[in-house]
Image (cartoon, rainbow, N blue to C red; front, side, top):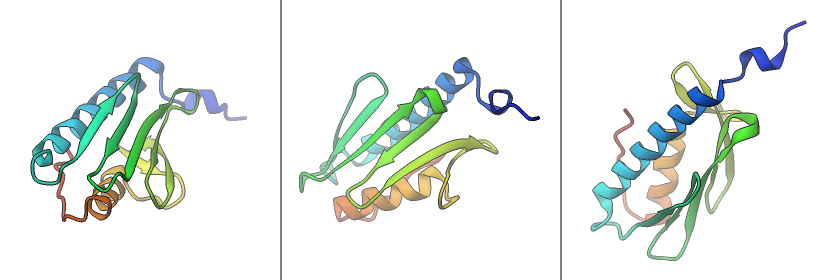
Amino acid sequence: MHNNKDTMLKYSKYYKLLDHLFQKIEDNLNLYSNDAEIDYEIQNYVMTITFINKSSIIINKQELLRQVWLATSKNGYHFNYKDHQWICNRSKRNFWDIFQHACSIQSKKQLFFLKQ
């Protein structure tokens, strides 16, 4: 019998991946901070991104499941780390595609993010 614990990320690797993801998100948002009027706040691996129209996106860790969760004005997504990227467990799309699309819709501007 295959144990799910064997396939789960170790805490240290999970937090390294989280740190990298959150830093890349910050770097990308900072590229648009003046143009798209995007504000964000991070506290204990919870990032709240607020747009000029007061809509928001929330990204947070789900430590027990070793996932990243993304809540947009339209939907919620859960991502597992597979093949060197965060993949939505329902749509199988990667985090950056979903996140970039959601930010573009909610900011009402076409945003392009650097993914690596």
